[in-house]
Image (cartoon, rainbow, N blue to C red; front, side):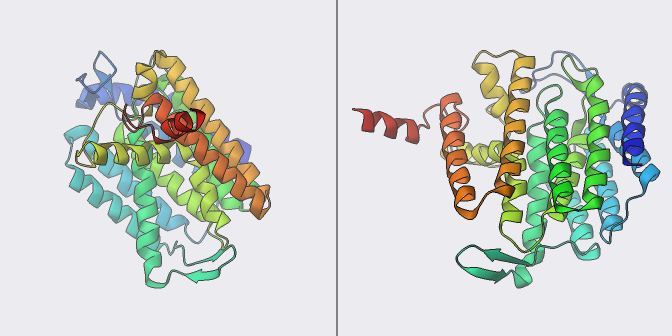
Amino acid sequence: MLFLAMAAALLASILLTPLVIKLAFRIGAVDRPNYRKVHASVMPRIGGLAIFGAFLIGYAVLLPTNEHAAGILVGAIIIIVMGFLDDMLEITAKAKLAGQLAAALVVVVWGGLQIEVINLPFIGEFDFGYLSIPITIIWIIGITNAINLIDGLDGLAAGVSTIALITIAVMAMIMGNVFVVATASILAASSLGFLFYNFHPAKIFMGDTGSLFLGFMISVLALLGFKNVAVVSLIIPVIILGIPISDTFFAIVRRIRTKQPIMAPDKSHLHHCLLRSGFSHRQTVLIIYGLAILFGVAAVLFSQATVWGAILLIVVMLIAIELFVEVIGLAGTNYRPLLNLVRMIGK
């Protein structure tokens, strides 16, 4: 039945997207070129409606059950409505944050999805207590916006999200979480179908309607799939989402170093840096896909490693990420502490 639901979602996404393209032009939900955009023509930008519609169709075929399912679906509807309003009216950042907060509260407070207790290696059990609700909300909002921030090139957010969802489904299968396997797989199929129209050269953008919806669902599914009491379970989704989390983290570092507002937009995200390095639009997207796959493989290896093996893997990954960031200038062209240290040692 899962394969039938995935096939239904994939087909629905392929069939719904052309209809959404027509709707976008009719109602004026279009993205116009400006100095921050890499596209040169007016593009429809509510493609997330096709992804959401396809997901609902696939979900209805299988109807996976879970105690948190109702809260997740209601939260997703709130995110879709807020994203659609932003694509139509370009609402303020505060209004978008309020919508994300409302969706997160529905999942956490009404749906009951919270990180409550973890076991730390060498330390023991740690109870978050009253902090469990704000920590869970911060995770959901943070990942939701991280996916939104990487939506800067044709097919980028949809492809990275699909890779993340497939990895989450594989990990959930290893852990025996049937609901997360089903939901992540159906959503991955919906996103993959949309890529037929969104990969370069794109015929439609997913807009905030899509990127915020995918980010919200990925944040919730990652939390739901790995919310047991081991700290390893919290690190796994961080590794899976290494691309959007790293891009967001170094964007904050970059803006702090240049004394810019943290929420200020710029053209120095990962995809911008790769484009400036001489890679084509399509090459840049494929490189980031490859990096996302590497993070996914690393997450699987991490889950099967011993404690010391997991620590070694994390250290190697952090060094590799830092070197990559410094080489491409993700945190700023003059940000090279590790490379400078290597040069000093080599002298």
